[in-house]
Amino acid sequence: MTSGVQQDITLQGVTKSFGAPGRQIEAVAPTDLVLQAGSMTALVGPSGCGKSTLLRLISGLEVPTRGQIRIGTETPDQLRRRAGLAVAFQDAALLPWRTVTGNVALGRSLAHRPRDRAAVAELIRLVGLSGFERHRPAELSGGMRQRAAIARALAGLPELLLLDEPFGAVDELTRDRLNTELPPLWEARGATAVLVTHSVAEAVRLSDRIIVLTPRPARVAADIAVTLARPRTAEVLASDAFRAICAQVSQALRLHQVSEGIPAQ
Ligand code: ADP
Ligand code: MG
Image (cartoon, rainbow, N blue to C red):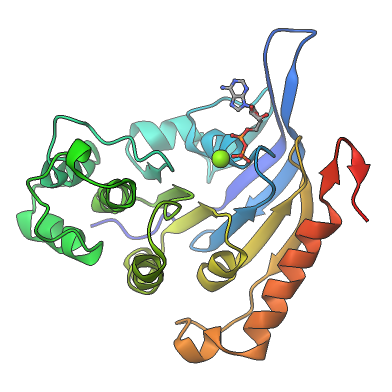
């Protein structure tokens, strides 16, 4: 059993542009960041600003145009190749011919973890898919597919967990339950996590730090520490301190909202 990687994620002068020279779209402006080992960071920002691109860069699925990313001394690609990181994307990306159990078990085997039926069944239970073990992705709703994808990502006990709007299609009640029950799974192991979410309240509830990004190209607009006690009990979530941080994040988002390059009022 691997404990947390205990390695910071370092981004140095990282940029990302897409497209042919001369017609390039700059998705990520020069970015320097250190994400502390064992912490959860939320990335929030307007649609299309470059959040997923930043996450994909950290995952090693995209390569920076300039600059470098390290997790400890490893490149994201090295960490990915030894299955030290797992990603749950918004579009779930399950294998269509595999059942829920098959997809979740794959998360374990790809991470070179021994077979463990009980662990797989427990994860499926935790994401609320008991009774759907033998269903294939096409037989599930979008929210159920996302939950299966989260179970698959967690099944490999990753050191680094990257979540791209993982609860986007999940109904509010289930989302609330997942936001309570899932974080202990990675917190207990000291895993490092990065979450992209549209929900300010979810970002504040789950993370230690919130990076607010500008409209494209993404740059850091605000860097807000979430100094709330853990676990984030109903009492913490109802506190003035919680509301104050939510207001701070919302204000940072509004401040940097632009339309056609013109700052909003
Ligand atoms: P977000 O996740 O914040 O909504 P993305 O990171 O998906 O935003 O996209 C940021 C910008 O980069 C968008 O303008 C998008 O069209 C562009 N982009 C993302 N991926 C690619 C790609 N593979 N090729 C070309 N452009 C891309
Ligand atoms: Mg995205």
